[in-house]
Image (cartoon, rainbow over all chains, first blue to last red; front, side, top):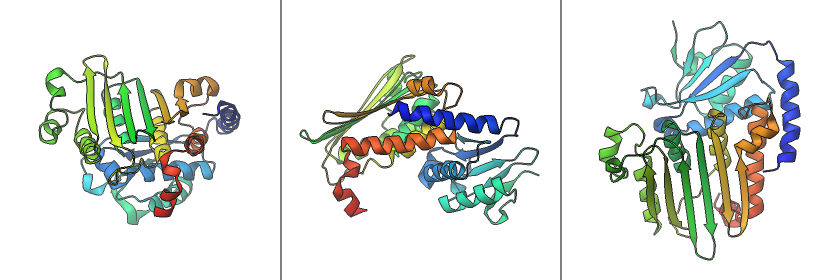
Length: 120
Length: 186
């Protein structure tokens, strides 16, 4: 690993951190049980992170979770916007993931056609 | 995919350190994949049965179909699977494959696997070592944390760098995934 290069990344990330200090955090949870992984959760996770980095969005934490019991709906992705109810997307593909980042996380619009469940 | 699955076992066993080692020995025509952790381990009685899909998937939470599938993949390539474990100390899974075997599944996108593991578990120490004969690529999240200071390992910029560094590093040491033939097949 090129640790010199990593130092530069640290500075870049640090600047970003300072900028968004105070902004509220968004959380995204990807189902990464065996069923999720088998259904393609890994590229979905990677796409979400790439897309966030590409669009320079820093206030989003992406975490993984185990099987939620709806294996047939995997890959499942939960989106928690601050102050709003949880939205769960089912059968997510990298393509859908890209739109979730762009339209829901950035734009604040729920993509109803991909929603599997929504908190009442 | 196997590596991600086996490493997830390590994480659910409460490990704070996961070491993933890959060795491609071209002359010996051997591929060795090793995942070692310091989790809670598997008790002796269970250890004999971890590769039996029907027993294990119903009786433990730590080990499901992951190990049996890996065992089958290794044996299909004239290799084998060993699971060493000591209760309370950790577990080591070693899978051997014939490197050039026709049925050997490609190693796949290891940078994606690692970025998912590290990004999802930034507090866990991950060590990744990949040899192609004498050439080595090495990554240690403890070293990364030292350089990063207050910046977290799951920062999107850091993960992006991580993926690129692994990809570049593996290409440089001549990992099988980057051989010409793989590009043709792709």
